[in-house]
Image 1 (cartoon, one colour):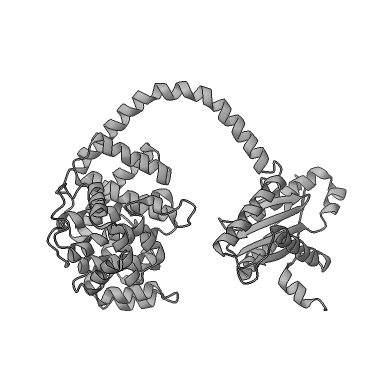
Image 2 (cartoon, rainbow, N blue to C red):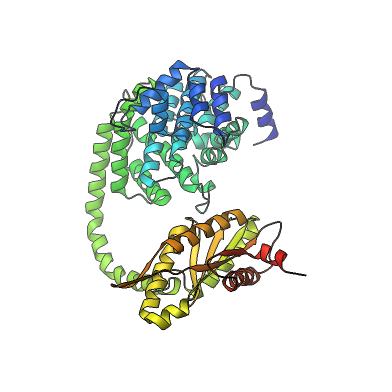
Length: 506
């Protein structure tokens, strides 16, 4: 964004901005100590807002089964984060609807915003996005920049030759006219309001999801927002088969949704429109009949499926054997057949890649070296089959107690290495506590008649931007040393290399 445009935005008196109640909600959203009591006190100051929260708590979106009669019950049903996000949505809708320009079709704009919010929420549920409480708000605000541009350049959208329901042509027109799109403007506005970075990134990538790399933790959230706008457009313009196919391709590429799953999501979105109308008091159904659109889409899907079915079947037999062979080779290289953890060969590659990524992004990386206590006695007493059973169940425990972004590899024998990206010492110690408690409380079945308990010794070493390592081998060696310290000092405990060194005599 150029300094000149930023100056225009800063000096424009009619830019959309949240009212007082919304500003207080934003403060709560950024306050880690916010609880039910704080938000209820705030909602009680706005009866209209409180009634909308109660209405949505009693809607089919949250099938509680009993009548929700007060705000405390409503928040128990909806949840704290979802209540804050919904309250902010309602407040911003009321505020932003009062912003008027000359060229933007505001009726179309608000229908699209509300439909996109509904679609975004359904997509999040379908794809199991963790931050689904914020998805409605993100879908609602993705085109916010259009309101700002309409204020700063009153004739901008009036001069657009195509229909505003064709969102792609609007985006191209903005790029040609201004050198940027409304996504960048909307992201700037959200920054002025101090909203979470996840929302700003989603708005930035709403018109071009490739701006959000797939490896970014917030990518699926942003992709739901981008796809929700395209789905809203299905219901807002006279869509053709080509556009529907484009949406299906986008759904597959961005969120790995098959055409069949996408159709189920569209059915759910259509059913939710009635709830959105009642909650926001906006007529959405006066536009193209969603049922007709969905029937057309289903017919198109069926026709194309029949056309390609024969070709797919012919190709399937040729490729299935090659894919199976490749998959088996890949699995054999990456995963230990006994424990299911990473093999030693692949572990070395994964460690180096993780270390290079931590260096490049100036992030933390923690390694935990785990060694089963007195494992040799298990093999000597019960035999190697019993030892293998203990290794399998031990690996399962480790995999269950780590975070979703962590990995476990078998270093050799009864030794394991845990890779914790972006984890500082405190996080690693919490993981170690979970692992130690799990091993203490678990009995391993080594035969139908016998169960034994096995403990584990753990060693931690952490690379940080403040205290970096030069080589991954050094980080792994220090984790191994810390693990050995735990083992030789009684086992069944963890030791951090930093503290082990500080406790050693000089």
